[in-house]
Length: 313
Image (tube, rainbow, N blue to C red; front, side, top):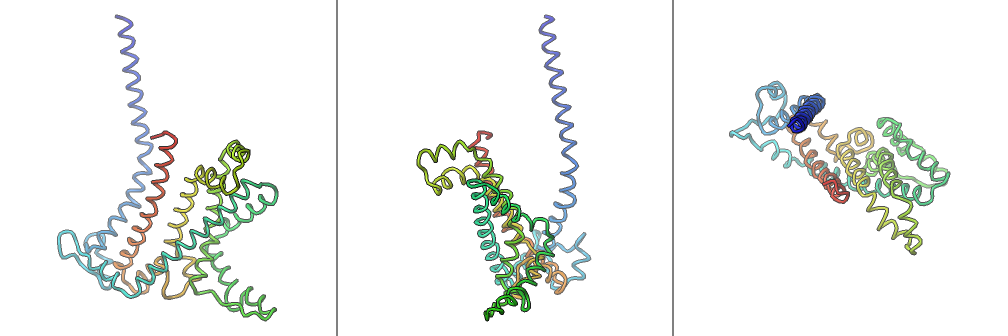
């Protein structure tokens, strides 16, 4: 009887301890959750209801100051602001430019990061370490300085035209073009991708690579069947973060891109400040948000796939 009471006491004590730990963990996690709700979630919600025509409450002042404000005509709101944006002749070219720059820049960044990571993983040595170190230099350069430097490098009196003119070559001026935006976004996005992909490739066990080499596997087969599958999640993380960052970029397009069409990050600022059309700028922001959410689905899928393969779920 005493033994039964002792066991029951221990189980009760363990249950109380677990409940205290759970409660403590909840209150420790509560502050960042409240910060996200108050300073991220609430502004997003207020902006969304403003985009569908709720002009009262916290949106009252901006609806009075702004131009072309569409007010709700039903209980759920109105889609007039969205229709106005999609009918605007500037929106579609801006959206296409944003998608093209994001796709091309992300593809090139991943290709270059994969090349650097594979070279350092397979060959190694002093040259690989030096190249890897140099590739991380843009990580410590502010984006505004990098964009200004690229603009000065490729403008009409920049280094490339000055240097090529010594050989009688008329180097094209690429500033204020789509190509300049792509060059700038690649330069600023590459270091993070190299860090992620290189760390993922370095985590692949040497035994797997050596076994494949002993079995006669070629370099490309090792890359295709061992390195890329085992480093798949870091590659996806690098790709998704790079794409989302480029899609919403402002500094590089405003320094290097044309006035029209321009990327949506710049156009949102133009609509909000220069054109005084805050409702339309919020609509564009939600368009970017929707596109970025679609990219984030790939990141979530990659993590779930990795968890299933490792047996965590």
